[in-house]
Image (cartoon, rainbow over all chains, first blue to last red; front, side, top):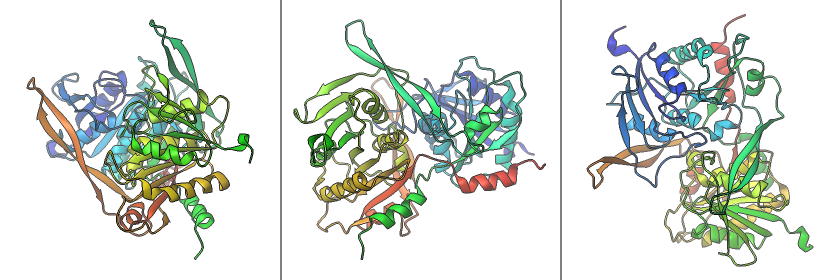
Amino acid sequence: MTENKRPLIFVSNDDGITAKGISHLVNLMQQLGDVLVVAPNSPQSGMGHAITINDPLRYYKSNIWGEEVEAYECSGTPADCVKLAKNYLNEGRVPDLVVSGINHGSNASVSVLYSGTMSAAIEASIEGLPSIGFSLCDYSHDADFSHTDDFILEICRNVLEKGLPEGITLNVNFPPKSEEEIKGIKYCRQSVAKWQEAFDQRQDPYNREYLWLTGKFVCEDKGEGTDIHAIDNNYVSVVPVTYDMTAYKALKEIEENWSSKG
Amino acid sequence: MTENKRPLIFVSNDDGITAKGISHLVNLMQQLGDVLVVAPNSPQSGMGHAITINDPLRYYKSNIWGEEVEAYECSGTPADCVKLAKNYLNEGRVPDLVVSGINHGSNASVSVLYSGTMSAAIEASIEGLPSIGFSLCDYSHDADFSHTDDFILEICRNVLEKGLPEGITLNVNFPPKSEEEIKGIKYCRQSVAKWQEAFDQRQDPYNREYLWLTGKFVCEDKGEGTDIHAIDNNYVSVVPVTYDMTAYKALKEIEENWSSKG
């Protein structure tokens, strides 16, 4: 394989460029190709598919990973980072693979919608680039990512070799590190679940009320075949995700029930 | 119909509580029920499905629509507003309908992913509430919304009377006001399209570079049955939207191609 044939792998995340998870991913990706990083300069968890249209964007060269990895920190969201990497900072090379993460915390089930990690991956799929979002179900700053390596390399090699169906990205979630070895990979559907929110009411030093959004994850859809079921049973969950949000079954139903006759 | 039987309609948007579009929607909803507004206190276009987890939330009572409409402005995102309305400011009443908009600008096609308007509607559908996002394909601050009235009332009455399939919200887009009368409603799928981005490079007064994200909407999927086709032909487009982003067809393909045998 000549040097020019090494794939270009673009890496982003939503926890910010200094997070442990992105460093872990960058180190792994160096085994597979040339690495370009564009990542937020501040935590962007929960940013969903936000893009920056009311403010200017700034970016700065970063030397976190030394000379071998071209890296930039950016003032914007994860989706902004992908747009920058695809259209501005790539020096004309089209990435062969876009990976996002490794997120500190689960992005299984409906979290796919709130996740900045997944918005980077979904943005790439809209741009026609094969992409994967990786998340570890452990929110701690210093989480242990070591048990994810072989699976990440296997999944990335599969995508580099076989590609992905058009418009599809993968939402990959790992169980937290434990005594027990991970049992393997399960290809899954997104569980039906939600965050049951509560608001924690407080007073600031000036006696003004403010709220913190809190919540617990509630999943009643634990049948086999769901991502939550896989993770709970110590498997890696892989959900293929589409950005086509049309509810085709409901489309037929509503059309039949609502259309004026004639 | 007794007073207590009037449906409770919750209204939000992403252009902020002072936008013309939400006022138009609030006035229409007063014909159908009791109205509760929780809307951002600043424009939140392009916020996607962002939620506020790293900052406190604040909200203030607003009298924009007088005594008859209970209204609050909130420092958070559209999705935050729905969570507040559902779990904190509703005084125990569950909304019968959640409407978001009317957005100043199109949310057809992939814009559903970037749209704060639609994130409010999608958030409501995750919460199990019937919901609709309304958008006008006219970005101007002072857009003319008058041609949308009859359609909005018809669609809302349909949802109040017949409900929506579980987990489904509607993405409704109106062509801009023109000489020609709107031809009717089309039930559609989301067009495959994307924003082709460019970055406008500038220098600030301190000689530091910054960028503005710009882009043009590119749609090569204009077949009949898509939202873009409907709007281009002066119909109202109605796309049923699901928050289940699983790509079921790809799930089968990937499972068959990638799984280790045995």
